[in-house]
Amino acid sequence: MQENNTEKAGQNKEHTLVIEGRNAVIEAFRSGRTIDKIFVLDGCQDGPVRTIVREAKKRGAILNFVGKERLSQLSQTGRHQGVIAYAAAYDYAEVEDMLELAKQRGEDPFLILLDGIEDPHNLGAIIRTANIAGAHGVIIPKRRAAGLTATVAKTSAGALNYTPVAKVTNLVKTMEELKEKGIWFVCADMDGESMYSLELTGPIGLVVGNEGEGVSRLVKESCDFVAGIPMKGEITSLNASVAGGVLAYEIVRQRMQKGV
Image 1 (cartoon, one colour):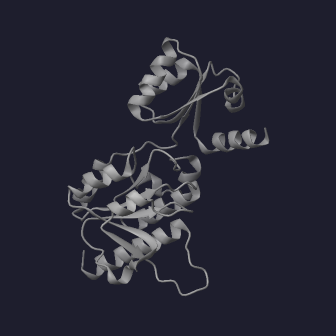
Image 2 (cartoon, helix red, strand yellow; image 1 turned 120 degrees about the horizontal axis):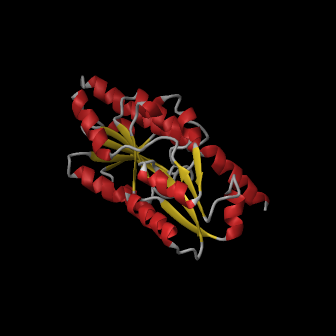
């Protein structure tokens, strides 16, 4: 019970808006609000619930079918009618918006892709770095990753207001589509080639992996280069947001050196 209460408190704190009740959730979808996650009473299949499930699948919201006790634990009002939804603190952009931003600035696209960053503080810090480094956007996966919560917005120190963030279903597929548009990818990995020996200019996507496991195998195989950060101390790893910042600024350095 203690674990559930902790999770409940954390979720309510993280999301700007908790929406309870069938009609309220349906209206949220109709208004165009971005819904990250929905909890639906398992076994409930009436008309409004079917509508909610259909809209959730259409828009890529994560669906969780749970028992009555679980919904009661999550509810703030006690009047959830079998449905509770969590809305994102900020609306997501599209990947095309980032490419258009690069075009407007007359710059080669510079994107940062996050392979399963779960800590909202890390996500916020990376968005902040992305803005300062001149990246045109950040791409995150829909599942097993932090979303745009209030904590992310606060940690980004306002950068979330200026830096587009897109949420995609499949990171590898998105990378393949971007490769067709001339973008190549480099990922951070401690066993990679020194970042100082790599050419990190041109249209580029920087991939930063999960805090514990790093970049997943399929994503790494989709990258053109694997970059390592030289380490001189006794500790052999960096925090994900720090590693992302170091590599982002090597990209900035090389671009400035070439006058781009």
